[in-house]
Image 1 (spheres, rainbow, N blue to C red):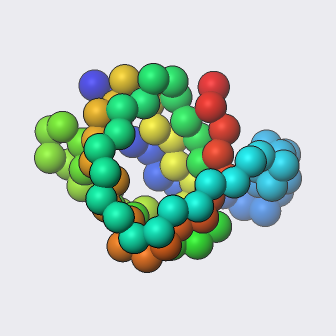
Image 2 (image 1 turned 60 degrees about the vertical axis):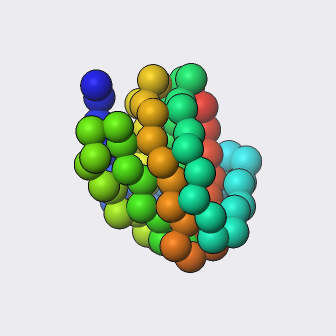
Length: 90
């Protein structure tokens, strides 16, 4: 199974990808299961999240992280601090 990718982008990369034109999503502190039916790219505007995959790997995600969730990923989201993100499904 493909892994979650977390990286940091330069302001130039953010502009080139048009990230600030993507829709936004917000969610309060919570824990919920999720399955990705398509790949998702997102840029975290604010918040702290822990995403745990089926294999038990924990990914710590925070403000200014660019994250790629692969298609087919089954995971559990734990939102530690309310999250706001730009997102794009491919």
